[in-house]
Amino acid sequence: MPTDGARPLAAAAARKHHDALERAGGALRELDAARRPVNFQAVARAAGVSRQWLYQQPQLRAEIEQLRSQQPAGVPSSQRASDASLRQRNRALLDENARLRAENAQLKHQLALAYGQQRSARLQGQPVTPQPDRPPR
Image (cartoon, rainbow, N blue to C red):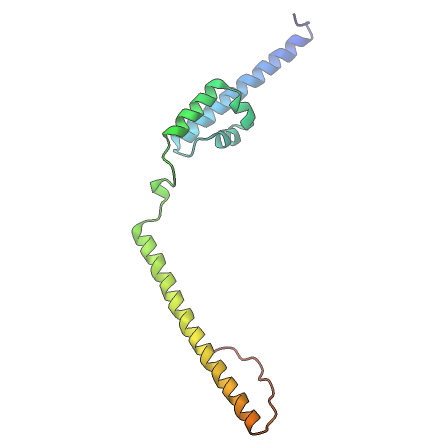
């Protein structure tokens, strides 16, 4: 039987355990009501308890597992990109790709001209000096 000095410690531990159960239960209900993912990590973070502690609480563990099994897998439909958004994004990427292809073709043309000028200069016996870097037009 606990001594008189141990009773306050046992009472404090019981209060701490009860408070943790209340916080975890509240976090569980809030996550579910907000339609946010219910899992051990989310509940532990929201309640300020450890996941290990949650796994050791049979009632909480059962509730978390039940709610977790009821949730659809993947991204919620409210967070998925719409078809119109995806088409717009695709169009922007295609436009950027076309712009980059045109720029690449222009740079290849400029490089071919520079090589031609160097070759011509060599054939004429002129010294070939590197041109200073010029930004593309």
